[in-house]
Length: 320
Figure 1 (cartoon, rainbow, N blue to C red):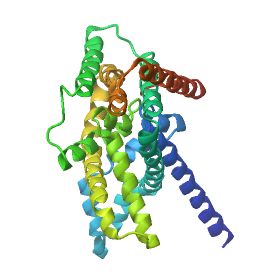
Figure 2 (figure 1 turned 90 degrees about the vertical axis):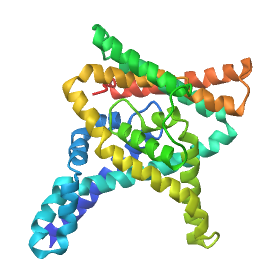
Figure 3 (figure 1 turned 180 degrees about the vertical axis):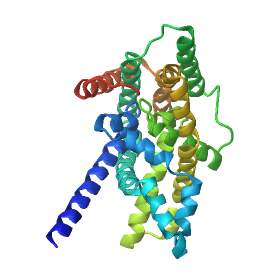
């Protein structure tokens, strides 16, 4: 009896620890310039994360769904263990919790203090590019071309020269595909991709509105109908994220295995080319006068110093 109690306490502590990992990873991914994948590396669970995500296959999902048949239940249990859901579920809940909290803060600050918010983000992105480029070499022509291609692509997207096809639900779905794929890669933040695509503030506001409508419904202060529109946006984004997780994330992992340094340089080049992206949000709220640019620059310095401090505390960031 005592042994069983100790085992239950140990399992609960392990679940709370993984939930805490999710909070850290979600916080990092909700901020451009800080990567959830890097946090996973620093906290020592990146290998387990990649193994668990790689194990999420249609075949295993079908085996789990076949648990209704008593003869197939042993294999269903094996599939559940292989997918490591006891790790992925609390990690995912922790990430969602962190993202929900930060989305509310971002939505509020984007309306009240856009210069401070997006100036800070600009500094985070610029400093993260500097920190990550330090550990990579541009010596070969292939490496230099890979970094240049990533930077050029991000600049073209940031300037709206290159855009994702479609709009509305299609754009939200594709944003989910690319953002969630980035979340598991060391060095790149899902929030950075959303800023680059111009969807960061919109999706933060939609998530905040959805959660607010759910709370209002539960407290009796609002009807469930208020949650339908923002809820649809959230669902479409999550579906895109799932597709990205089992497709593009795997493609990038294979690219890292076959051509590690050029792939990393392309990814870090994306970060470097994304530096001007938050300035579009500043321009939407204020004319880019000398005073506005000075304030933005000051907040960018604060963001850069915060990233450099985090880098020093972590003992240096390595993109892989």
